[in-house]
Length: 185
Image (cartoon, rainbow, N blue to C red; front, side, top):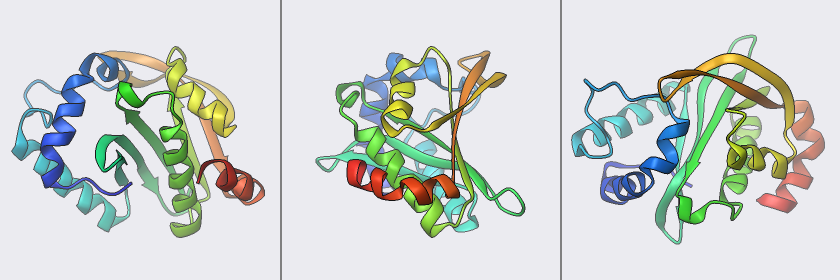
């Protein structure tokens, strides 16, 4: 995993275009007045610049997921909040061709290690639409705690969708670190 760069446009764009039907049902609707980073190189470059800025400001950490040196998805830590909360939200997507092969579970495990051990966060959460069985399977593989359903939590593809909230705290990470590292890192 590494941050995406402007030079990744062609490979990232190809994966996103090929997987549009597979991915967009789980994502917020793109504003039609904004350029599409999947088809517009300058929009993708701006996206990379903004993500670099987010990383420098400590508010988000987005990483491309690479398999055999090729873009296969993303694993991101967003909405990093400091102060009394010390938390962030993990999101991810993967090329349908690579789904079910545990690459996302490995990426999420690595991102949790980064969040807890390098950033010093107290809590991370992953929020998933209940019918998204593939994403829920990642949480089952990692045995991440289910905190229940948040009603109409996020807008997904134009609809306010319920989300299952999964979470882990630093206390849980400390207990489970070796187990997760042995299985996934």
